[in-house]
Amino acid sequence: VMQFLLAAKGSRYEAVYHLAVKTGMRQGELLGLKWSDLDWKKGALRVRRQLQRINGHGRILTSPKTKNAYRTILLGEQTLQALRMHLEFQNLERRFMQKYDPGMDLMFLSSVGTPVEPRNLIRDYKMVLARAGLPLIRFHDLRQFRLLGWLRKRRHLLVEHGHLVVGHHQRARDRARRHAGGAGQAERGHTTAAGGEQGIGGAVEVAVEDHQPIAAGEAARQAHRSARGLG
Image 1 (cartoon, rainbow, N blue to C red):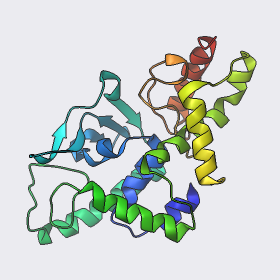
Image 2 (image 1 turned 90 degrees about the vertical axis):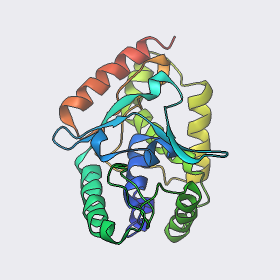
Image 3 (image 1 turned 45 degrees about the vertical axis):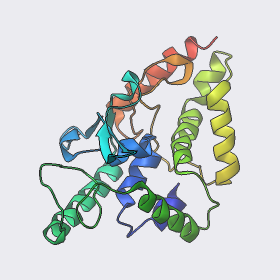
Image 4 (image 1 turned 120 degrees about the vertical axis):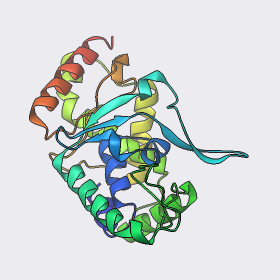
């Protein structure tokens, strides 16, 4: 993860990549974020929409895929700092954006002020992977780095209750390990907990970065309850 984020330094999408690997958010959810979704004081980020390309309509904001996709994510200081730097750059860049609309309030914009074209993001993402010396990993698979970190942090809970991680999560973990070749080793103290979707064992959880002390404790309790219900 660190290898990837270091290679992303200087990219206009650096903050996107931080959120992707630390929270497990989908590409559309990331590009649909607004600054009003972020509570700087609490470090809380609300997921309320996604950016999609619809035939005949172009890029539009739509509702998340499922009701469980509506969630609040507590961010760690490293991710918040990446967003502060991104906002500072965006404030400087806005005066030169030909199509900037203040009412849109999007967190991530193109160089002319329009919603980000997903193909441009993927083009930059592939260049970051090349600079990092990493194999070609799907953008979607960045979400699995968060899952790997969660499993490592809570492995003792799963073992204690005699349960195995199976199905989609097991396949996702294996795929991420094959692609990343060890790059999925989570940075100590900066890994996110389970995402706000259906978590392991079917429990709906709030995503938390592990170095948030109080929130992390709640995540551990959620993991404990999830592990008990796996059997």
